[in-house]
Image (cartoon, rainbow, N blue to C red; front, side, top):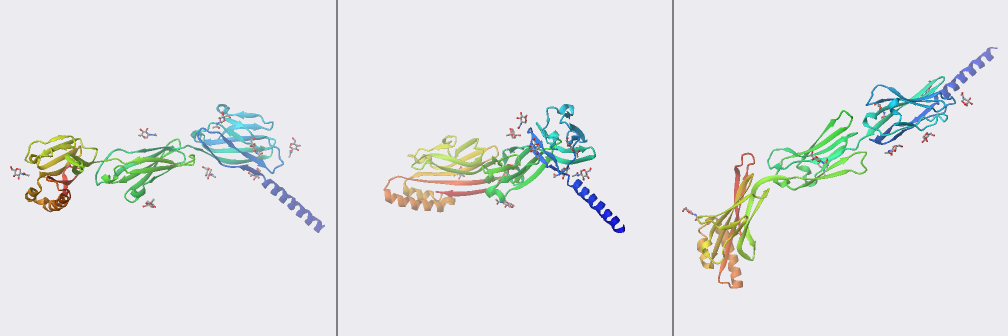
Amino acid sequence: MHLLWRINVFDLFFSLFLIYLKCNRVKIISHDASVKKGGNITLSCHLIETENNLTHIVWQKQTRENPKQETFLIIDKDGKTEHKNDLLDKVKFIGNIKEKNGSVQLLGMTLMDDGIYTCIFIFPSGKNQTNINVTVLVPPVGNVTGKTLVSSHFNIILASCVASNGRPAAEVFWRLGALNDSLRTEIGYTEHTDGSVTAVSQILGAPSKDLNQKKIQCVVKHSTLTKELELDYIINVHYPPELVVISPDDPTQTQEYLCSVDCNPTPTSYIWIKVNGSTPRSEGNKLFIPKSSSDFNGVYICTASNRYGSASGFLYVNNTVFMQSLYCCFFFSFLFFLKLLLVFKTLHNWHKQQQPQMYVRFWCIAENLYNPVDGKPSKVNVKCED
Ligand SMILES: *[C@@H]1O[C@H](CO)[C@@H](O)[C@H](O)[C@H]1NC(C)=O
Ligand SMILES: *[C@@H]1O[C@H](CO)[C@@H](O)[C@H](O)[C@H]1NC(C)=O
Ligand SMILES: *[C@@H]1O[C@H](CO)[C@@H](O)[C@H](O)[C@H]1NC(C)=O
Ligand SMILES: *[C@@H]1O[C@H](CO)[C@@H](O)[C@H](O)[C@H]1NC(C)=O
Ligand SMILES: *[C@@H]1O[C@H](CO)[C@@H](O)[C@H](O)[C@H]1NC(C)=O
Ligand SMILES: *[C@@H]1O[C@H](CO)[C@@H](O)[C@H](O)[C@H]1NC(C)=O
Ligand SMILES: *[C@@H]1O[C@H](CO)[C@@H](O)[C@H](O)[C@H]1NC(C)=O
Ligand SMILES: *[C@@H]1O[C@H](CO)[C@@H](O)[C@H](O)[C@H]1NC(C)=O
């Protein structure tokens, strides 16, 4: 009797345990999903391992549009659907209630549809439910912006790379190549009310003239883009004339000289003067000197200007018979050694060619560094070459 009772109690507990196991084997197969804005998405939700027949499947959502949980679809045991009014052409039941498949398709997804969707299986005895996170992705729009800079020693923003309205935020960075060590980047994010994010990567540095025309590249990466977006940018730096060189336009004939200037933008004016002489014949950056006459000997100055400053270059013209040129050497003492050098060179050539007339010429380079803040020269460096 006692033993029998014990066996019955054991059986009872064992049966309850089996029922418990069975109930807990109920499983809902579903997974989170993401979709590109404007696209269609399937939310799959499938109940397995239960013998119970369903009475309803109910779908609810909590979205950016309406953060309060609301029911938007009810499917009854015969497969008849009942939609929330305005969603009739946006939601499609594609499952099968007999097979306990509650899958739905949502069409034309917008950022407002982003949120948590709940799939609920209702039985006569209770319910089982699961949440599905739905993320709507938006490809960012990439753009590089920058303006013409004026050379200075101060660190400023050189260019900005913008990845607008991406969801989630895009990854933005710069490929700087050799400039990597001299420039710095800073990234910032702005979240918009619709959940999209604008990412901006700014590049900072001192806009030196060395950066002018340097090519850099901004890269935008996002899960919606099949390949990364590469946006090229060319840095444009304006600077005053720094180096003026006067040299023969054509090395074989020294009647036409050219004033070449290192500056950005190109000079707006060239002024030619002859020291202690009449205005020479010139046209823009060109100077014309008749070859045959020593009347034109002397020092010529080309002053080139753009809107940031000006700088000058010097040209010493000495059209003379070889022997006389030695006297002239002392006239411009600062050119003396260079001139000697040239004399030796010409002598060498003269012996080779036996020409009666020698054209000795010099040109000097004036390197003027201007302070871009007040426009005054901060350093003047004169150097001459033959
Ligand atoms: C979404 O589904 C609708 C209706 O089935 C179809 O017309 C449309 O082309 C689909 N859109 C995309 C992006 O697949
Ligand atoms: C479910 O429905 C089928 C047919 O409609 C029926 O044969 C079966 O007994 C039902 N199962 C339960 C657990 O009610
Ligand atoms: C549920 O229904 C969808 C749409 O018909 C289908 O793609 C999916 O394979 C079904 N799931 C299962 C587990 O049968
Ligand atoms: C399904 O519902 C039953 C009864 O309400 C509950 O015991 C069980 O834990 C639920 N299972 C899941 C996976 O939600
Ligand atoms: C789903 O969303 C909820 C609420 O935003 C979050 O707590 C949860 O971690 C998300 N689940 C997954 C798998 O992303
Ligand atoms: C990039 O930005 C500039 C300035 O805001 C704008 O003029 C240009 O149209 C933009 N380009 C693209 C491709 O969006
Ligand atoms: C650029 O500089 C950063 C930090 O200074 C360094 O981590 C990175 O490797 C450099 N990249 C290249 C291509 O040199
Ligand atoms: C130009 O003339 C001035 C005065 O007439 C004189 O002092 C100066 O040395 C001359 N310069 C040259 C390069 O001839």
